[in-house]
Length: 271
Length: 316
Image (spheres, rainbow over the protein chains, first blue to last red):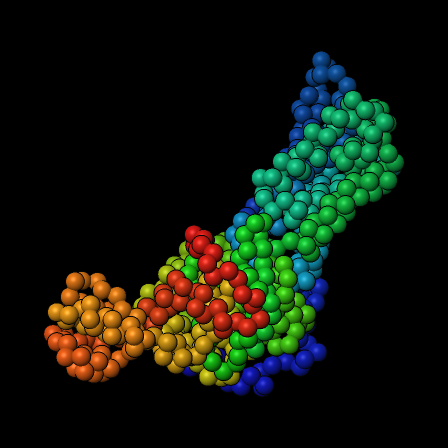
């Protein structure tokens, strides 16, 4: 029995024999593609953006002819089209978390780190991958939700348009916000190694922390969800918020800090 | 070649590996033998950089594992056949692994063929039997056509056919000049596969010997039946043998031969009614070594002598 004909003949040139960031990214893309559960989460995220984004417009359209229904469309029709983001961020965070913790629960992280002993390229690749997939999928979903809402609202007194100042920014911002949420999920997943723990931590960060903001108004605009929400704001706002892009930047800073902590942990600990 | 130098790994208050120094050479199958909990897996994880040594270092072909720019081309390691995502197909698992080290799809199909998994390559690993998982793990180790192969308990859970297959594969890989380092807690398995043995007990090196030396170590004992056991015992002990007396008229003698016992008895005109040489198996020699490591600690000159009278802790 032989494993190859001749080791020297089949071995590529020494210069080609390197683990590179691009190769690790390719590997992570293969891994991402080949797990059905990842696709279920992407599909669920898209559906949740669509469902939540179109339904306010539908309600407006259905109640438009009814004089008792009050002001048609509410105050922020674009906000309605983006309202799916709030729930979707949990699904997207779960995607980021599972891409990492799935490797720990199955033990495949040991195989992964044996192939890439530097470890950090794996973290970067996973972060980039979930960010791009999440942002791209949700951008498509938000745009679809927007135009669907526009069409539905066409027959009512309310109208929304891409030409309205702030609307394109809100749409792109929503996708970037969700892409960043995926990175946050991956980072917290790598830090805690447990899906349940990471879900609890991200949930706390995104949904429980804002309660603190109610008590301490000074920090309120800087809390993750509030800062991130600024980029999706189109209508008039109650209370203080950061400027849109600054808000997204603050949110991205949370993800960056989590990612840096995860990198430190990965580099130090045993697997 | 794997050079383990003064490797120590401490988890909390447990010392899993204690100042282990050993070199694993190419061209032969080196068996890494020890009871469960002896530190074999920890040592192997340290070789591939999954566990950081508390002190000491491990070099693979002259470099730390993590310093190899494309480690899969240097070392193929199967530490745990279950370390695979069950939702992924065997082919995709290998393709992802291969991609990290710049190995193409063709090589993936080659190794799948080699381990006999081509027909199930598209199936999800979660549905694989233990034997199939082991084969997939072996396929992964061969991806980069590495010079060093590291396998942790590869025959665990395999059927006889699979065990024979692994045995043949390991021998073939060693014959191609590769370093093959394979752990087991079964001496019987190693006896059939390994050319060289590294014995580990409670994290310490017990022996680093060739299989021939090990066989020679497996000294025999002789069972003697005589109506004059006291007198014979006295004479044999004076001659340097070790004698025990399992039955009133039966002696078990080690440290001498049946021939010498017969001579001693004849000279003293002691009647022997039975004289049976019993050859110890490798298994017995192994058990003797792991039960009484003090005797063999001298094989590690670098290790400072520890108190041989210290009571044996319960095996981990």
